[in-house]
Image (cartoon, rainbow, N blue to C red; front, side, top):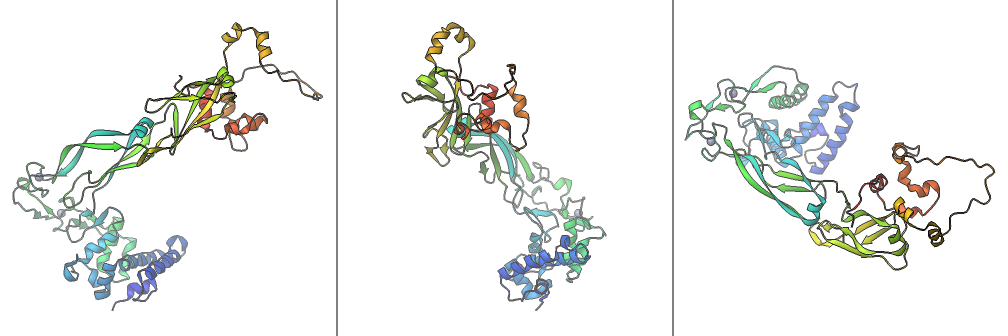
Length: 451
Ligand SMILES: [Zn+2]
Ligand SMILES: [Zn+2]
């Protein structure tokens, strides 16, 4: 029995799958070319071990190897009981992903499954709140139904390609690192594979496009012109379900391009939520900002505070005798986003209450001494007075400039809120707040749909 591959990994032929895996990991680490820059043989050893592991980690190829050594994996050899030939199997190892090389055919790379197509799909928060179905027209390649994907007219058979003698590739003599590596395990066939990995010593036959055979012009299917597939317009429908998270992938299985002998790939729509002018989503919770007036802050309110994503008005009544501080937030239980797959269960809607001060026009219209008597007293001066007191002129400042500056603590000045910066007020006011909302607020942008 040939034990060379086992010897390479330093395990006995009786080793379990797990033992082989462990041994390979250890050896691969040890012999990784990056770790052995001074050893010119490192890359070779590494390649050898990788090849050995690829064969021994698969029960099918391991069985073939155990039975007849390297010869069992060579081209054209048949495994017992109609197993696919070893070359085909071996070819899979180097595929990595969707493509693998099929040596039993012409040498044209063959795919296990068609390529998946991933497309971004823009949705609004309303779409995700309410759900929606979208019909769209798509074009894809489908197997030609005139020739059933053979590309041939009637029963015409392709003729062997003269240029490559049916191999699908032509050979170029170039030096490839993998060459010697594989030669040391006396496996001439692997030379070709190793070389093809680096794409240097084998090249696809241009005459037959790697097929190994060719249909004569007159033998080609009229409909697809020998291409085997034709373009087809299809109408697809996707369902944006209530509560789907941002980035969710909606998979249309098998809706991708068809190719003869290969299951079609999937078409995947990846949801991308557009920024909403009023609401922000955090999982199943929503956040919004609402402006209330000074009198509402002092005397309370009972009105439609929010227009929701489904168009409903949400009426809220503040408790009697409650003074609302700037930035106070309230929670509207069950008014958040629906839970995906369980849309009747909803998160909460957090509303940050911002207080709109009255304008100059209002001030002009009121009896100021009367107002002063109504309002709480102004702040007295500091006691004790600082020893030095300077007068600074009152100048309106553009807050945007200050905010754009970065501060040594690597946090933005205003991220902390005024409270922690100036040691004044209640810090908790800003705790739940997102930076963006604050930005909005400071910028005077419309926060909510004013009611
Ligand atoms: Zn056709
Ligand atoms: Zn050819």
